[in-house]
Length: 336
Image 1 (cartoon, rainbow, N blue to C red):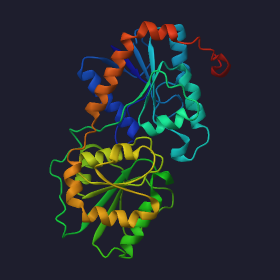
Image 2: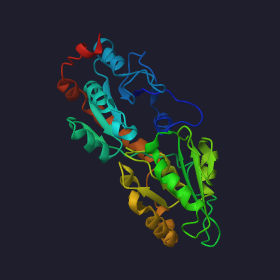
Image 3: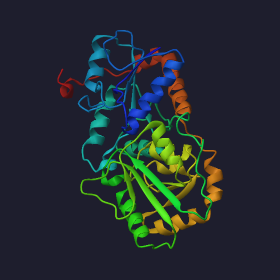
Image 4: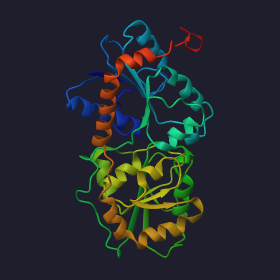
């Protein structure tokens, strides 16, 4: 089949959406399918809408372009909308409304967590032809090879990494941990490393701040640490904690968004008011969670296989889907 993915691939460190596209494309091509990032061909079977806004930096086409394609070029292409964004994540105001509106052009929808699916269901999303497919990272890069295991005597190393610098990425907790280490509140030798971008004028007192890195370089840096921390709020999916878990690091994760779906059973969950106690609990039970995280099940191969299976399922039902496709009365807001 021919699949068009609505995102450009950006080289070097970037967000989780870029990694998703790279991993999915590589898997689909390895199975003999054609993958493109445009709507110039007249024989596209599946159109995967990843960013409805064509003005987004990583977007290669938006929902208006898709509407024109299925109306004027190939009416039996199946449109799948992957939803991994919401207002709650960055404190915006119109993203949810825009996504719900643009979703009207889709025949099927994939959510990256049950949490974000529930969020949109509560806001009026029609759940017909939708499912949840959890994200995953490349196990050839993010794995336990040469992992640095904590001996429970030497310095304990905690790490996190983010591309985005929005405050909701967890900077309240990251700042709190930094101050705890600076004031030696836990009475333990702890080092915290943050890899990625930070808010403007944000500074750590004693923690290590590294510029964004990716791929093998990032995996090696993660594996030099012992615990992976994520305090990212309202995260629909995210890749950072997946990469940390695949590298064998027990997870210390906030109870927010889709994180529990990805992290439960492979670390310790905390609320903002019990972070200190949960950190100490994880340290005390480090070896137990080290053994558990070795069985972490999420990777990009499983994720991509689920996408391919869904695409094939949709194509088998193409005639029924096209028959049920509503007469898209979108001209009023598409300006076409």
